[in-house]
Length: 403
Ligand SMILES: [Zn+2]
Image 1 (cartoon, rainbow, N blue to C red):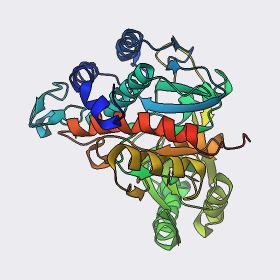
Image 2: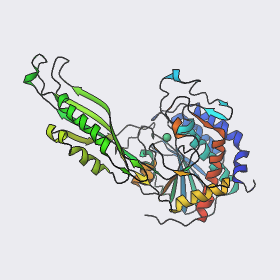
Image 3: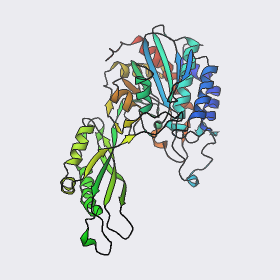
Image 4: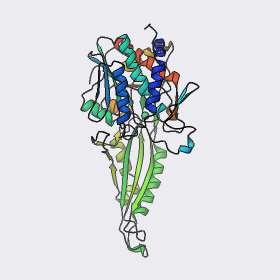
């Protein structure tokens, strides 16, 4: 080992890439992550982690060091499905490397983050973790289905309380310090069914919904942008209705809303805003925030409301400063700083639990959930180097008071 974070990471490039190829080749949809978790567990054990365990939800937690100051690196191991295979130039699970690019579903979102953080841990194990620090590397489950649920469990049931959480989702190697929140809402109208041959005898729930749909579209237009995350949004992602038969007036209609939340927008403000729409009032429609209660691959059900709060780590917070210092120390230059467009497990670590959280990861957000997903091998190496530098910068920085 020498003093260069980047040289040390380059020295393990071959093993890092082979591991990444292995995990890309194991499909792992949400609630089906068992096989990939087993493979990652095997790698952590081989690399000499001090402790490796799988919690009751199925999250894999690797530990290095045993100091009082805790830093956690999180990567979710589940992926979304491949979609239309004809849009892919090669097998979505090939893990092929060509011209320094590694291809496959999950390459950017986010098995790259898994591989780089697991090897970041290995490099720390080799060179020694600072005495007062414990490093956790979590390979977490079900993020694509319900972001943050794994960390609600890891914090509340496993008892992890990190002073800093690093979300290793793709940032194109930039330092990210926030993103919009989101929630899932249903609006339901009721009518009175009757024979479709005489609709005037009934009340059509779909017609009541028509005015609400127009109001939702207008609401999206007037949501105000707020710095630094921009504007919240609302869109209708699904509509369905019920009636006794296809020859009857509809007696129920439901729309599903995808609401993205910027600074200052919460569950309360967003529900109140919809409930106050004139069309919702006129139709006496109900507004409900949905619940999530899908079993994990171990069979555990850990219900939560589908409200995922907005978060931002201030530019002058110790976590941001440690990330900027780590970037300088690893690469000799200033980091670019930004925010994700999508949502991550930070909705729980930062938004619900209040742990200072920062983002840095290999790959690109633009490839997430897209065909021909890929990441640069160089990104994997650089992210691993950055993670080791970050642990040192964290150890040298100001401790954050627990809250
Ligand atoms: Zn992701």
